[in-house]
Length: 133
Image (cartoon, rainbow, N blue to C red; front, side, top):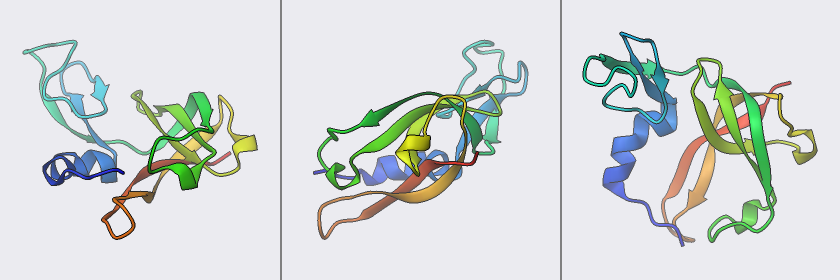
């Protein structure tokens, strides 16, 4: 059974629901999840919030046929590493026809149900990726 942490939820809400990361004003590096300092510039960097477009390309993927507890109803499903158009690479579930999932395919972030905290628990939503072409 999956249990949500309310403090963690509030800390990550912008990243989870808006695909918001950070960008260094100095070297233009982008980060997801958000960082409080630039790994290239270190202390000389100037970090600001950065909204990603949610559009990207699958660079690697796998099909999950034996899911972890709480995700049994979704099996089988695809999880991919997506290179966003802005440069950051993130992982996420890909929705749609599994036969269509392959490297090089374009995807777009969509807001969907992720899981429930038990039969009477909180429904958790987040970003997944849908095939676009």
